[in-house]
Image (spheres, each protein chain N blue to C red):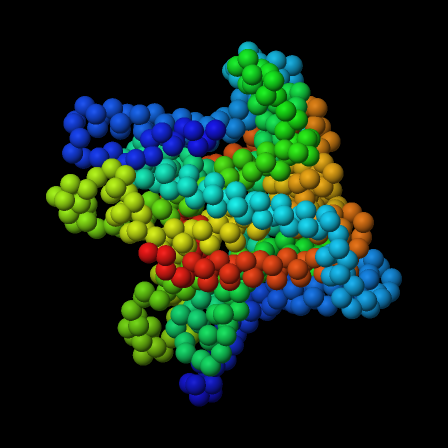
Amino acid sequence: MNKKTTSDSGRPSSSTSGLGLRKLRGGISNVAMLAYALVTLYPLFWLFMSAFKTNDEFFSRPFQFPAHWQWDNFKRAWEVSDMGLAMFNSIVVTIGALVLTLVAGALAAYVLSRFQFRLKLAVMGLFLLGMLIPIHSTLVPLFILMNKVHLLNTYWALILPYVAFELPIAIFIVQAYMNTFPKDIEEAAMIDGTGYWGIFRRIMLPLSLPALSTVAILAFLRYWNEFSFALVFISKPALKTLPLSLSMFSTGYMTDYKLTMAALAISVVPTIIVYLIFQKHIMQGMIAGAVKG
Amino acid sequence: MTSTSRMKSFIVLGLLPALLLFVIFVMIPIIWSAYYGLFDWKGIGSAKFIGLGNYLEAIQDPIFWLSFKNNMLVVVASVFGQVPIALILALLLLKNHWFHSFIRSSVFMPMVLSSVVVGIIWGYIYHPEIGILNFLLDSLGLGSWKKLWLADPGISMYSLMVPIIWNYIGPYLIIFIAALQNIPGEIDDAAKIDGVQGSRKLFSITLPMIWDTIKVVIVLCISGSLKAFDLIYIMTGGGPAHSTEVLASYMYNNTFSIYRFGYGSAVSTTIIILSLILIAGSQYLMKKDYR
């Protein structure tokens, strides 16, 4: 279905054919593009429309706007699914993991970008290897580990592995950025008697703010949305994060479509806001992370 | 303290938090799973050493091979679905004006959604009675095309491919656009002077110019599609009748549904080895020059 909308306009508009033809072709391609974008956005649009409907409308008039906008759905979904609690848990885990990622990542990036030492290549190779490892293949051994150290059903069971898996990307993004700083900045500071920690805190951290914010945005999305670790390491209802509680809620309330849709809609809003504000950062960061891996 | 020892201690202290976290929560679990894979172990009680018994069992389990086949299907569908769609879109979305940016943003959007949300939405789209896909087919008079999209073992795996492809096109699109925008303008001018245009220009100038990027994207696509788990778990859980089982869900179901931790560990190790082989293999193939 997706292919159909695009393949008929697969050729880039040529420049020497007649102006009318070119315009026509550009027009066709734009219409095809628009159709593709709408197909892409439609599931999300449909989610928000359905969130305002009654259960009956949900399947009797799936493509129409709601006859009466049921704002009440959101209130009920929030209460029934105990979303406040899930939101709180997600916020705690996300912020905790973010702080740890930024501190440990920036520090390691500074060392790897500015110092020469014997095992440097080995350390960098180790982190690189980490990017290749499929995250799910560690579910079983991590579960065993968490069980042994009694971290199952704690925030730490999520925070620590989240950080560990995000660190390689974080380090590579920040290190690449720090590599572009001229050496003179630190040399001047050294002469002034500032130590390494001082240089890190007062010079490197503020200067790397753009890279750090990219890392923070990417990590936010990753942590906020993460599902499989939460699924395996958290079974206590009081500690469920948003994605986990949504998946449970949707299974339990499978037939109460409007509530499920409203709950999904609420959960999607923060990520969409972040996306709309930081689009450029997110796109560039995801690509930098992906290409390095 | 001398300046070199101060530097040394800073290097150690600076790397320590990141290294510790990474080694404890990424590297050690991998080694552990290789170790536990050699035992018959229920998660509690004593573990019995059985050598390569778990691996032999996996090799003889048809469901293991079905999961492997499905995993490869996802890889193939991603490479032949995502890469061409992303490339075609990129060729059409080169300009930086608002309309093209809007479409790029829309295509990228699913990347920031939780796979739980994506999975539940598509679950409803495919739902046999209330799903909008069957509703749409009905209202178009194509009622005979209606299917049990996710409940029919014959087609469920293919139904899953659509959301998987839909979800992850964004980054490849952006990579292709960046590569296309990097083609120097003089080459365009030269082509114009020589009268090269249309598909000939596409195949003899544009595509060769970004061939390296295409290779990178294919490798990314392969390693990315090996990670497919969340969406599949949410939408089908590997069912019906194991028809949508991939290696990760096979491992999950064996470990956390029937508590065979030793066997699950062995499958985990197999997944790591298989993905490293696949990534290394694809990198190697891609490094060879086809031009």
